[in-house]
Amino acid sequence: MAALIEAAKDKTYPAEIAAVVSNVPSAGGLQIARANGIATEILDHKPFGRDRAAFEGALQTVLERHRIELLCLAGFMRILTPWFVAQWPNKILNIHPALLPAFKGLDTHKRALQTGAKMHGATVHFVVPEMDSGPIIMQGAVAVRPDDTEAALAARVLAIEHTIYPAALKLVAEGRVRVEHDRCLIDGQPVPDSGSLVAL
Image (cartoon, rainbow, N blue to C red; front, top):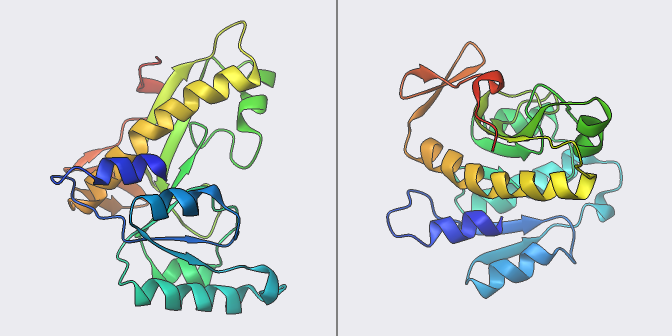
Protein backbone atom coordinates (compact mmCIF):
# COMPACT_ATOMS: atom_id res chain seq x y z
CA MET A 1 0.00 0.00 0.00
CA ALA A 2 2.77 2.42 0.90
CA ALA A 3 4.46 1.72 -2.44
CA LEU A 4 1.23 2.54 -4.30
CA ILE A 5 0.82 5.77 -2.33
CA GLU A 6 4.41 6.74 -3.10
CA ALA A 7 4.02 6.02 -6.81
CA ALA A 8 0.80 8.02 -7.01
CA LYS A 9 2.57 11.14 -5.70
CA ASP A 10 4.05 11.54 -9.17
CA LYS A 11 1.73 13.91 -11.05
CA THR A 12 2.14 11.84 -14.22
CA TYR A 13 0.91 8.65 -12.49
CA PRO A 14 -2.51 7.73 -13.94
CA ALA A 15 -4.17 6.59 -10.70
CA GLU A 16 -5.06 8.42 -7.49
CA ILE A 17 -5.18 6.60 -4.16
CA ALA A 18 -8.57 8.01 -3.15
CA ALA A 19 -9.19 6.02 0.04
CA VAL A 20 -7.74 3.28 2.22
CA VAL A 21 -10.27 0.92 3.77
CA SER A 22 -9.35 -1.60 6.46
CA ASN A 23 -11.30 -4.27 8.29
CA VAL A 24 -8.68 -4.17 11.07
CA PRO A 25 -9.00 -0.99 13.19
CA SER A 26 -5.36 -1.17 14.32
CA ALA A 27 -3.87 -1.66 10.81
CA GLY A 28 -0.68 0.36 10.39
CA GLY A 29 -1.62 1.26 6.85
CA LEU A 30 -4.34 3.57 8.15
CA GLN A 31 -1.75 5.79 9.82
CA ILE A 32 0.38 5.87 6.66
CA ALA A 33 -2.65 6.87 4.59
CA ARG A 34 -3.66 9.63 7.02
CA ALA A 35 -0.10 10.97 7.09
CA ASN A 36 -0.33 11.30 3.31
CA GLY A 37 -3.69 13.08 3.39
CA ILE A 38 -5.66 10.09 2.10
CA ALA A 39 -9.19 9.39 3.33
CA THR A 40 -9.48 6.31 5.54
CA GLU A 41 -12.38 4.09 6.51
CA ILE A 42 -12.52 1.33 9.11
CA LEU A 43 -15.04 -1.42 8.45
CA ASP A 44 -14.49 -3.98 11.19
CA HIS A 45 -15.75 -7.38 10.03
CA LYS A 46 -16.22 -8.73 13.56
CA PRO A 47 -19.66 -7.18 14.26
CA PHE A 48 -20.93 -8.90 11.11
CA GLY A 49 -20.08 -12.33 12.51
CA ARG A 50 -20.39 -14.96 9.78
CA ASP A 51 -22.58 -12.75 7.59
CA ARG A 52 -20.10 -12.13 4.78
CA ALA A 53 -22.83 -10.76 2.53
CA ALA A 54 -23.69 -8.03 5.01
CA PHE A 55 -20.02 -7.10 5.46
CA GLU A 56 -19.44 -6.93 1.72
CA GLY A 57 -22.63 -4.96 1.21
CA ALA A 58 -21.33 -2.40 3.69
CA LEU A 59 -17.94 -2.43 1.95
CA GLN A 60 -19.61 -1.83 -1.39
CA THR A 61 -21.43 1.19 0.08
CA VAL A 62 -18.14 2.64 1.37
CA LEU A 63 -16.45 2.20 -2.01
CA GLU A 64 -19.36 3.78 -3.87
CA ARG A 65 -19.32 6.75 -1.48
CA HIS A 66 -15.68 7.37 -2.37
CA ARG A 67 -16.40 6.85 -6.10
CA ILE A 68 -13.75 4.14 -6.34
CA GLU A 69 -13.02 2.76 -9.81
CA LEU A 70 -10.27 0.21 -9.07
CA LEU A 71 -9.52 -1.79 -5.91
CA CYS A 72 -6.00 -2.77 -4.89
CA LEU A 73 -5.83 -5.39 -2.16
CA ALA A 74 -2.81 -4.99 0.12
CA GLY A 75 -2.75 -7.18 3.19
CA PHE A 76 -6.52 -7.72 3.03
CA MET A 77 -6.73 -11.25 4.40
CA ARG A 78 -10.32 -12.09 3.58
CA ILE A 79 -11.59 -14.16 0.68
CA LEU A 80 -14.14 -12.16 -1.28
CA THR A 81 -17.45 -13.77 -2.26
CA PRO A 82 -18.44 -14.36 -5.89
CA TRP A 83 -21.14 -11.67 -5.47
CA PHE A 84 -18.61 -9.01 -4.50
CA VAL A 85 -16.12 -9.99 -7.20
CA ALA A 86 -18.93 -9.78 -9.77
CA GLN A 87 -19.49 -6.13 -8.82
CA TRP A 88 -15.90 -5.39 -9.87
CA PRO A 89 -15.07 -7.45 -12.98
CA ASN A 90 -11.37 -7.01 -13.77
CA LYS A 91 -11.33 -4.06 -11.37
CA ILE A 92 -9.80 -5.73 -8.29
CA LEU A 93 -6.03 -6.18 -8.21
CA ASN A 94 -4.18 -8.36 -5.74
CA ILE A 95 -0.52 -9.06 -5.13
CA HIS A 96 0.59 -12.53 -4.10
CA PRO A 97 4.10 -13.42 -2.86
CA ALA A 98 4.76 -16.25 -5.31
CA LEU A 99 5.00 -16.89 -9.02
CA LEU A 100 1.44 -18.03 -9.62
CA PRO A 101 0.11 -20.56 -10.35
CA ALA A 102 2.76 -22.00 -8.00
CA PHE A 103 2.27 -21.69 -4.23
CA LYS A 104 -1.26 -20.37 -3.95
CA GLY A 105 -2.39 -19.57 -0.42
CA LEU A 106 -0.23 -18.98 2.65
CA ASP A 107 3.39 -19.69 3.68
CA THR A 108 4.69 -19.23 0.14
CA HIS A 109 8.34 -18.57 1.05
CA LYS A 110 8.53 -21.57 3.36
CA ARG A 111 6.98 -23.81 0.72
CA ALA A 112 9.32 -22.50 -1.99
CA LEU A 113 12.33 -23.42 0.16
CA GLN A 114 10.90 -26.80 1.17
CA THR A 115 10.28 -27.83 -2.44
CA GLY A 116 13.68 -26.68 -3.68
CA ALA A 117 12.31 -24.04 -6.05
CA LYS A 118 15.04 -22.33 -8.10
CA MET A 119 12.96 -19.20 -8.65
CA HIS A 120 10.42 -17.41 -6.51
CA GLY A 121 8.78 -14.02 -6.71
CA ALA A 122 5.51 -12.13 -6.74
CA THR A 123 2.45 -11.84 -8.96
CA VAL A 124 -0.08 -9.07 -9.53
CA HIS A 125 -3.35 -10.48 -10.80
CA PHE A 126 -7.01 -9.65 -11.18
CA VAL A 127 -9.22 -11.17 -8.49
CA VAL A 128 -11.70 -13.91 -9.37
CA PRO A 129 -13.81 -15.99 -6.95
CA GLU A 130 -11.18 -18.76 -6.86
CA MET A 131 -8.30 -17.79 -4.55
CA ASP A 132 -5.07 -16.67 -6.27
CA SER A 133 -6.37 -17.76 -9.66
CA GLY A 134 -7.20 -14.61 -11.63
CA PRO A 135 -5.56 -13.43 -14.86
CA ILE A 136 -1.93 -12.45 -14.30
CA ILE A 137 -1.01 -8.83 -15.01
CA MET A 138 2.66 -8.83 -14.00
CA GLN A 139 5.25 -10.99 -12.26
CA GLY A 140 8.70 -10.39 -10.84
CA ALA A 141 11.20 -13.09 -9.99
CA VAL A 142 14.16 -13.62 -7.69
CA ALA A 143 16.62 -16.51 -7.64
CA VAL A 144 16.39 -18.76 -4.61
CA ARG A 145 19.85 -18.95 -3.05
CA PRO A 146 21.30 -22.12 -1.51
CA ASP A 147 21.71 -20.42 1.88
CA ASP A 148 18.33 -18.63 1.83
CA THR A 149 16.23 -18.41 4.95
CA GLU A 150 12.52 -17.73 4.89
CA ALA A 151 13.12 -14.16 6.12
CA ALA A 152 15.85 -13.42 3.59
CA LEU A 153 13.78 -14.73 0.69
CA ALA A 154 10.71 -12.82 1.90
CA ALA A 155 12.68 -9.57 2.02
CA ARG A 156 13.84 -9.92 -1.60
CA VAL A 157 10.33 -10.81 -2.76
CA LEU A 158 8.92 -7.80 -0.88
CA ALA A 159 11.27 -5.53 -2.81
CA ILE A 160 9.90 -7.03 -6.04
CA GLU A 161 6.33 -6.47 -4.81
CA HIS A 162 7.05 -2.78 -4.20
CA THR A 163 8.16 -2.47 -7.83
CA ILE A 164 5.60 -4.51 -9.73
CA TYR A 165 2.40 -3.48 -7.90
CA PRO A 166 2.66 0.23 -8.82
CA ALA A 167 3.78 -0.75 -12.35
CA ALA A 168 0.80 -3.09 -12.80
CA LEU A 169 -1.68 -0.55 -11.46
CA LYS A 170 -0.26 2.01 -13.87
CA LEU A 171 -0.89 -0.30 -16.83
CA VAL A 172 -4.46 -1.02 -15.73
CA ALA A 173 -5.24 2.64 -15.02
CA GLU A 174 -3.92 3.59 -18.46
CA GLY A 175 -6.31 1.11 -20.07
CA ARG A 176 -3.47 -0.94 -21.51
CA VAL A 177 -4.59 -4.27 -19.99
CA ARG A 178 -7.30 -6.37 -21.62
CA VAL A 179 -8.52 -9.80 -20.50
CA GLU A 180 -9.24 -12.38 -23.19
CA HIS A 181 -9.97 -16.05 -22.46
CA ASP A 182 -8.85 -15.58 -18.81
CA ARG A 183 -5.44 -14.20 -19.83
CA CYS A 184 -4.19 -10.63 -19.70
CA LEU A 185 -2.96 -8.88 -22.79
CA ILE A 186 -0.82 -5.78 -22.34
CA ASP A 187 -0.89 -3.54 -25.38
CA GLY A 188 -2.25 -6.59 -27.21
CA GLN A 189 0.63 -8.89 -26.18
CA PRO A 190 0.37 -11.82 -23.74
CA VAL A 191 1.98 -11.46 -20.31
CA PRO A 192 5.22 -13.54 -20.29
CA ASP A 193 5.10 -16.85 -18.47
CA SER A 194 7.02 -16.93 -15.18
CA GLY A 195 9.49 -19.40 -16.71
CA SER A 196 10.72 -16.70 -19.08
CA LEU A 197 11.37 -14.11 -16.35
CA VAL A 198 14.90 -13.09 -15.45
CA ALA A 199 15.69 -13.85 -11.82
CA LEU A 200 17.41 -11.09 -9.86
